[in-house]
Image (tube, rainbow, N blue to C red; front, top):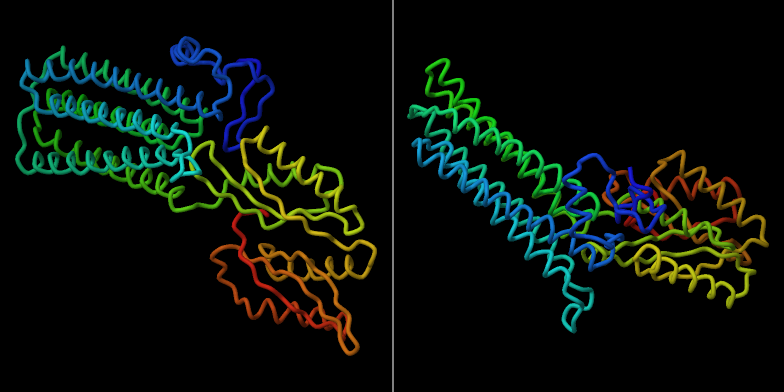
Length: 420
């Protein structure tokens, strides 16, 4: 194992040695390619290094798939095997998927312009979606061809050369799946994760062609080829559906990774004077292009200039260390009035008993001649299915039970990040 790992953008691993290659060891060829072609690219979150990783994976995929296409096409043509020839065409389509990935990484690396001030990094998500759709198309085509073979079985031509070509293809595709998944995890790329899944599907597809060839030689049942193909096609369709869902999610605007949310919260709370944080919102404009905003709570007695200085420091640190452009809203919290703190804790405990997914913040008291307004924000998770009216009623009842003069003025908010 190398001396250290770099930070993945999904916060699954942290850096201990910025000079080490982000490879966990084990697979010699994968590590050798990274060492030879990505020398000095130690931080995959930087746009230049990320593009270099993506280009390497795409070019290796194009080369391997074209090589497999040539070998299978020659073998299929020489021995008249439709199954092997179809598998060769599948590899040719995989090469086109790699071209889509290569174009996606190059477009994603374009700098912001007047019409796109947030950059073009979402092109990578579109490339991943394109690869996923191509997997679905391949699955549908294979299902159609296999079903026709079940209805009209054809004899499978057997030759040991074909067996050798298919076995070599399985080995190469298995390595490509591992290679793309490793690079995909290093740079947190849904495009390469989808490509890795496609290579895994090819392993299963080619193995099915090989198995059907051997089973036909031993049993003489020609329909085995079609039945095996139908099963493989169903697996590919199921896998493609999951990949389309995963690659479409960030384009629609998904909730940020809970690990990232916890990391941001822990980092912010570690700064001196910070009492709490809430209202975190993360906007994802593609890998390496994340923007976030949140509210930070400081003691009201703290100097405004000191609080502003700390806010500036937090924003600068997140940009430099996490590659996140952070905007912070300053919230003063009254600490001199003991009743404010006690009431906040009392209502928080009451709310926790109602539903642990709910929370409150920005509580303040406004006393008057006949009653005291208790103002605070009630935060509900996105898609909350409970009765909001019941929650508000129980909170108001709890406040009145503590002090009959309390009148709750509650503002309902939606949370845009889990665990925050």
